[in-house]
Image (cartoon, rainbow, N blue to C red):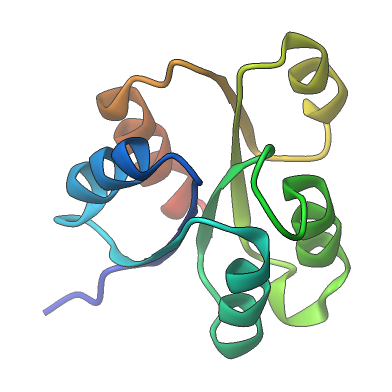
Length: 121
């Protein structure tokens, strides 16, 4: 039996968080949260293969979380998919993350991309 990859969903919109969770739960072992402070706690306790990160979240910002992921030696292999409604932020982050998705996000597209980058480990 193959172990599923771990993913962390960081999305403050409860409906979108639930949709992403339902879309990915078959293929991934999931943790999810709705704020940056909880995300930082979770990242201190486990190493996800993928983080799906909303930039505009309460508490520690998505940008700060991204900086933490990129600077933490335990997380150097973690793939990051950023979701944002801000075109300018999407352009700025293009070279810092694995994938940038503009909102509204297609759950099936997100699933396909998450599966693709999780296999690149």
